[in-house]
Length: 548
Image 1 (cartoon, rainbow, N blue to C red):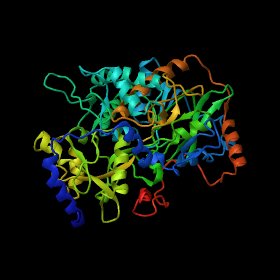
Image 2 (image 1 turned 180 degrees about the vertical axis):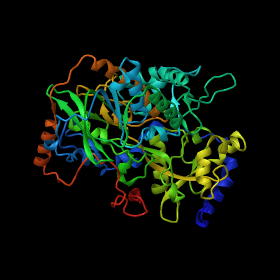
Image 3 (image 1 turned 120 degrees about the vertical axis):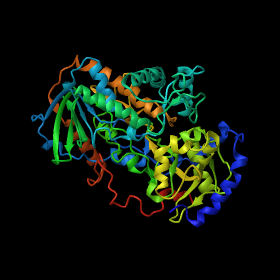
Image 4 (image 1 turned 30 degrees about the horizontal axis):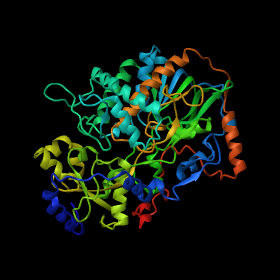
């Protein structure tokens, strides 16, 4: 198939300017210009992007409108029809989510003294199906000779616009090297130099090269090893069993969850002394009509059920839009083009082959600059179906690192595009921002405790680690660092508590409040799976064309 003729003229201009751009010194954007760029062009700053919550612990807060809709929604269960005396599963620790945070939490609970049979992992899809497994990027840890946790801390705080929760960032940067040691012990394969040192790359918004990676299979490689570890220990797990509600006891503690069995279409009651929420992100809600890099089950279940149980949320006015997701060919729409391309020399250029932003600015700045270039300056490239994007000039990576580098080190990316007649080692890729990460979420402390006793949370479902913007590579670090902590602290917690009488009274009260607000009973949450039969994207042209 290749690129259509109407796009080839722009590609010719990109090729003509490539030699001139190779090695060009690209100016960084100033702080003042950065703030103006974000205010004017980043999707989080649109007037119609947010609304105030009318219910719950964050009542009155401005949150993303689509998130407000699912928080102000009726449950999937009738709380009065669930028989809590019929316990289907009884465990010490229930882990909800089978991605990186959930799996590492379960393992560290075992390492902390719990019997594997005392733990249960419940996951919406198959074990391991998660944003973690799909991660093509890197893991940040300050292990380089010119690096330190302090520099990692400052980079992370700056990337999050200094609204991150400092104690969480401290935990992130201090524990990251420990996680790498754990990976090494378990057999995670990461590239090293001839002397056995881990290779490090610089990621956007960072002051040092501290990102380790496994080609473009970082998340998959980590999950491969950790899932083997779960199997080796014999930790029980339920697949195709998402959580639809948390259970409380008469002492005000979380004491389990209601699961929905996709196979039997029945509700399942799980009693547990502690629950660890590791349900991941929200990309499949398609905020503002944007495409997403997220896996099929990323529909924000965790924040819905935690919020109904009284958990405090934070930073729910902020979504991360990854700057480089695929626009063409359309079967790859929304596919992530990893930031590692830009760390290795790829540049973002407009239809004329002109550089318009430094390739290693923080992700929110990069995304806003691309939107401005396409819809503010009219310098984007239009596809036959009306999508617009800019070029990620990947052939520069080949020129800098040698022939065959892209095909060897980015094999899956190369194959994906080659199926459609595009050789990314020789041709640029058309990209535009897509939803990548849930910056905010359930507020936790450094022990991963939420504001509700017995409820712990880790990974993308939480807020506070990244502030208003996550740096590349910190996502994997986050889920494993806090997954580990959740397992340790939940294991210690269950040794000291007993469960009271089970109750869903909190759900009953939530429903009564929704009725008093006049919320339509047709609005239900959590949204377990995205329904693409609905008019989610009204045409082939995404809603971000509102920037016209």
